Length: 151
Image (cartoon, rainbow, N blue to C red; front, side):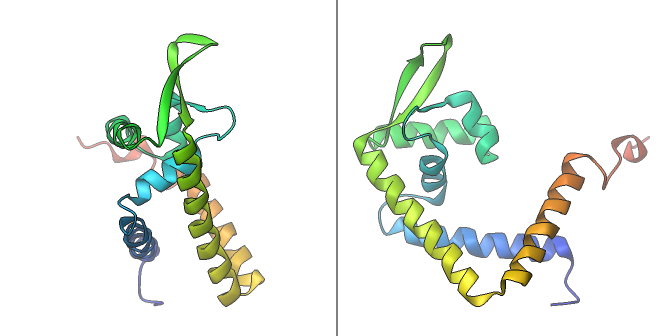
């Protein structure tokens, strides 16, 4: 593994996690994206549709398709935002809450299984490295945009 690049390890690990969650979700006629959306919606107060995309790291078109499918399956309902007449709040239905609990259980099982097989020190290093990578990307510290403009 030492010869692999960091981005390669991140990508292949994420693809394996994604495949695992999608295989679990497919047993119930759903997808990982739907499970992630269920977990991202505030179960008590709903969530503005405009904040879901950034929260989930999804593009608006993908999120729109996911929300449309979730609404068709009776997992969510859209209601006007009382604080912003132009906005929409996404709420979980009772069925959506049930499926959210299932998704949460799967995520917690994954986390607990990893924690049982990795020392707390190793896990802290993983969290730290992940934080450094995310901060460097967010702050454009890896590729300075001005330096890499093609002429």
